[in-house]
Length: 190
Image (tube, rainbow, N blue to C red; front, side):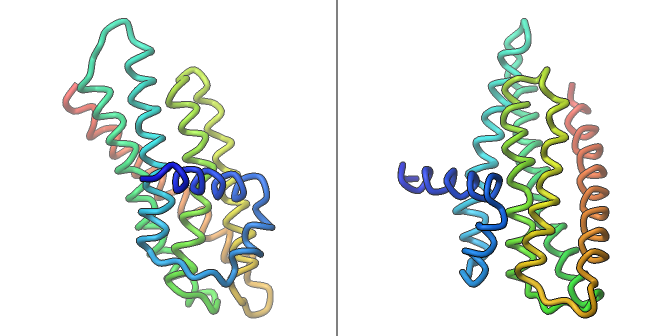
């Protein structure tokens, strides 16, 4: 990946987190395919996050235990990829349930960009594990989700709040269940 592309990914992540309203307004009509969102945005961020967890695991222990660090970093990638796909399916289904005029592309964009704060905070907490309580800052992604839903979707009679609350609660549930399952699975071997 070229240096300019990497810089573009982090510029986008910065705009999503620091100027979310401006980001959604500027990108409202910009079409993005799943490969552009995953390969050109989310997966590179997840790779950085995974490397941070790998390095953090190696740095925090007194022993050099490579298999556990590898397992933990791979678990992070699997967790966020599964959360992405399950959340996209869920949000896309909720569009019709709440009467929103949204597409699968809108669901992908909402989910990918709303995961940005969680991934970025996870980079920091992966490198410095004692800062783990800062993970709560990742919840800012749900505000980004709400702003994006408000900008991208057309709702009947003020159903935006109900849609966002339902989507956020269900996504939190999905994230929690997957975290517990993947943690249990990864600790089977150690």
